Length: 479
Image (cartoon, rainbow, N blue to C red; front, side, top):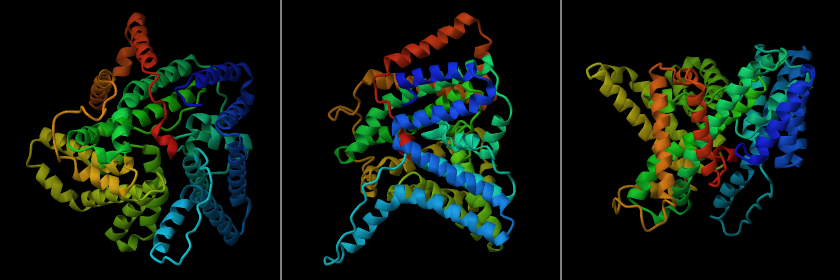
């Protein structure tokens, strides 16, 4: 049941009626039952898995407070952490591990290969595992008390707007919102609806129409060289941003309809001046989670190592971010590249500031943003490639046999759709440009007359409906 499907709209509409029709003390239960229905619609057996996962972490949280013996509490904590990580590793990485072992065994013809396991990765496991780990770690630190109400805790892990692809919500942000009665509020409905519509526009009109050339090239990259690769090199960033941020807006909009605010994932990343800043603007819920629960504890524990601790912590953090995305060496390289870039920025910060002070400020800003953008384009080659070999081919053939034409390969299925997507992104970019400068265009738009506002809404709806037949999957659902 994807966010941009008719069945989701029907599900959302019926749930809204039921949710606000019942007394507020039953509303958390209604959301939990709806979330389980949402999960069961995807895969019925997934309901049992997520409930068992919720029970495990629920009682772990209670046990960390109930057990008074420090040693026993420590054992329970590490048992739960290793079990959560072990479950995630088993489903996502076990066959990847077997594959690499078999490569080594292949060097010895007499050694039999390890058979692969026929397992299905539970949808959303990367997201709710990190949420559960963050919850347990905070309780163990003493910075949060365990949630005693199982309905609220299970809702924290299974809440349907964030279940499939995040954001990676924090327990100390989610639970307080459930402690007070959530009453009917027309502002929640209008704000949630607008955010959902905007996200749907980004996904369907821009993301889906740019998916065609990106998926076509990466599906058979050795058939292309030169301009098609260079075009996809740039377009892939726009595609991923509009696909993922569109999903996030729809998730946040859906939650807002029920009076719940989820953490945002994006803050105009194309205006980042360096890679470190980029990760404070891109997939923020994941990067901030890794900063709080991996990087910061590591450098505190090994602070005697000085700068070495910071560098090792950076690489460890981005290794986790890379491998979190999937069981493929391309994601390992993706993480290493980010680690190298941020380490470089760490060591050269003073020198770069000295150089920048001698140059015009606007030139420095523009150049910094351009370099950051190009670097992210480069790393996305590994994100989208099926293997290291394909990524290497893509990079080495960017400027070979270069001709300014896209014909001959069916690269762009609908040139008009492609052009409209780029034009729509230009509008999005201009809006974010003014937002970056502190101009609240959303507030300006909401202060216009009803005719202007609803003309804008209907224009978005018409464009969404026109392009709704294109590819509808979300990139980050596979993680």
